[in-house]
Length: 128
Image (cartoon, rainbow, N blue to C red; front, side, top):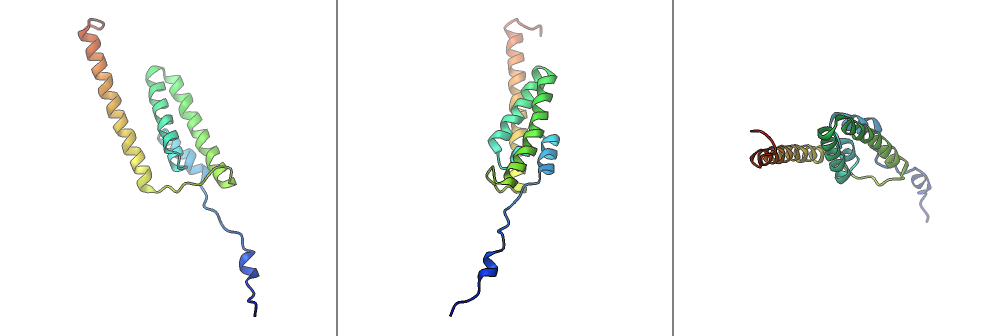
């Protein structure tokens, strides 16, 4: 006796998807967040650091890196949906962890900048 399971096998398996608009919006609000939404945490941190350093050195490089990060997050989400890039599950706690890590980086950069300015002043390179 053969059971008729052919109708169950014909249904396409739905793959998890990423919303490109959410990815781009997340990167618009917080540099690198769209990459984190796509599951690319290392890439997101690099974009965040690039935006920070680029903005501190000259404003234009920071804006260019930020804008490219928005574009990259959007395109990567589309690639995930097309199957050209791997899907990586991300949840609220992952994104919260990313934000907390980047806030810690801001603090570390601020402390390092104050230290370097203080040392430059003590060495006579800057007036105190």
